[in-house]
Every structure is written in C-alpha cells, then in structure tokens.
Image (cartoon, rainbow, N blue to C red; front, side):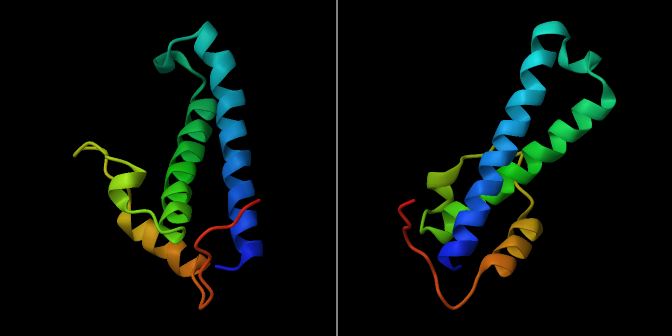
Length: 101
C-alpha cells in the first residue's frame, strides 16, 4: 500500500463514518430502529458493513493483529472473503507500517 492509497482509504473511512453519523442521529431521536424508512436503514447497514471491513484492512496493513482490532461475537464475524479481496486490492510490494498524516 502506497502512502497515497493509505490516505485515500483513510479518507473513505472518514467519509463513511460521517455518513453513518448523519443518517443515524436524526432517526434515533424520532423512531425506533425497526420503524425506520427501509431505504435509510439499508444504506446505513451497507455503510456500516463497508466501514467495518475497511477499518479491519487498514489496521491489518498497519501491523495490528486481529485481536487488537476487534473481538467479534461468534454470530457476528466479519466476512473473511471480502477482507481478503480488499487486502489484495490495496496490497502492493511497498507496505506502509505507519504513516503520520
């Protein structure tokens, strides 16, 4: 992962986090989760899924172990196939261990 790829992925994570925060806050105040508009609920679920897996990938690329990143419950494990695809997408010969941005 080059420094440019790292910074782009980090920006994607920030954008996803902001999107989730903006979509979730107004809906939580007004309605219970089961009464949300299905479109909003679906987009929040997808964004949360993307954020979780990209966060795992960026942490692995920086040298963290899976135990340091998260300790998921047995019925809520991350999608290992998707993580592998993302790792292949971002992995190059040059590995960034730590980038100060």
